[in-house]
Each structure stands twice: as structure tokens, then as C-alpha cells.
Image (cartoon, rainbow, N blue to C red; front, side, top):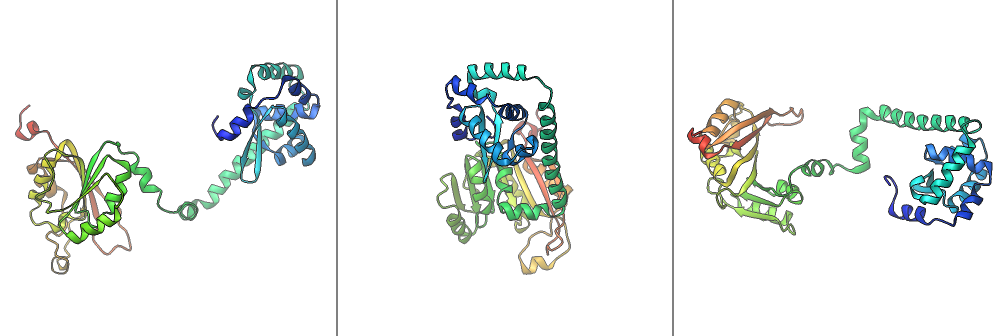
Length: 333
């Protein structure tokens, strides 16, 4: 049953003899409770308001019904919620309840009880809606306070097929490699700087499906058609011969494999060439699409990323490039 733990389900399955169940039905208040709990799952305090009885009285009758095998109980924190769960009563109990419910009719006090119960449930839902309405403006922060901020990326990555082989080219210290590893069959990290690979090795220690290589991106240490996908994140502007790297990516991608490329849009900050060794002042869509096509990659998507007000660098773009089949490259049908 949805919403019930295995222990609660087993507890509900421990059915007493039929005579005990009959005894539990001998009180009119207990019949009122069962009629309400057939329709709604409620707590003790809510049932007290529905039946307009003292909470101690309701608790006493609930105890008899629960021990008699009529109720399933669910705990949430310190609160207990009850419901008549016909599907765990067994054939005898279900038939007995069908007769009892039919004979007791739909008149008073059952009709008033049910109206009050449904009103309480509606109020509970309205309270939840009011909570979200009050906190909508700060919901991201509230959720982060409750659950931290590490759940979003693993959730999104879980959408990936589990049998993928993926490479992060220019992997740096292995942040992307470590994030991908739990979600795919194998992750390859490549960086030309041995110090970066050493740091990535520390970060991914214990991940059996990670392979790291210190190598140039225009001479990848991978066999042909090894990868289903690859990423190039904030790396391409450091590379002088872009076409050489893209041709090498095409070599190691399987036909239909994709390269996801994140980099800066074209800009005029020439000081980046002097101070940070940038080889390119960002990229324009048309120019990148042309060099990609000459290398065997088709531009499938280009998305300008939202600007981050506090960011110092120029705006970014995200491009998705796909390796086209050899016959498409040669123009053959």
C-alpha cells in the first residue's frame, strides 16, 4: 500500500479471530469511526473534532478497533493516523464490513461526521497551499535550508542512460567526472596538466568506473568510436587549433555521439589573451558551426546562458554538437 511502511503493513495483516472483530463493532461510536475512516485517513485530534467527542474517548475506541484488526495505523513523527483498510481485512472481514456498512445506512450521524471529516481534509489542503503561497518568494532558500543544495544535479543526471561512456575533456580537478560517475557506465577524464589529473585522482578515488589520462586534447589516448558523449567546459578558448581538437573528438565519438560544449560568447576583452593565455576571444555561433561541420560535427543546439550579475567573465553559451555518419560527411546517400 502506498504511504505505508512494511512494518505497518505487517501489523495490519495480523488479523484477530472473527469473533473479536464482531465484538469491536458492538459500540455505535466505533461504527461512526469506521464509517469516517473508510473515507479519510485522520489523526486522533481530527477524529475528536469530527465526532465531537473527547480525545480520550476517541483514543479508547481507536485502540479497540485497532486491536480488533479493523484499522491500519501510520506514524508520522509523533502523530498516528488511522484508516479503515478494507484490502488488508481479509475476505471474512471485508464481507462483514460490507454487511455492517450497508445495514447502518447513510443517514445521521454518519452524514454529518463525513461532512466534518471532508471539511477538515479540505482545510488541511488549504493550509498546505497557504504555506506554499507564503513561502513562494523564498522557497529556494527554504528548501536549501531543509535539504541542502546537493540534490539537484544528481537528480538531473539520473535521467541519463546508465550504459553511457562519457568523457570530460579538459577535466581539471575532476568535478564533472565525479558527478557523472554514479550515473553512467564509465567516465573518462582527460587533461593536459598532470597536476590537474593528480587532483582529479584524489577526488575520484574509489570510483571504479573512472579512467583519468594526462594528455593533449588533439591526441586523445582513446580508441576510435569509444565514447557516447563528451563535454568541453570552458576549455576551447584555451586551444589554438580548434579544428584539430574537434576532429579528434569526432574520431573517438561513436556515430550519433554528442559533444556538449560550454564556453564564452564572442567578446572584446583582449587582456584575457595576455593575462590568462586565452587563444580565442569567445566564439560566434556561425563560426563555430562552420569549423564543427568541417570536422564532422553538426550543430544541433545553441543556447545562450542567462547572465550572472556577479560574474566577471563574458556571458556563456551551451552548444550541442553531434557526430554525423561517415556517409553524411562524404555526401553519399
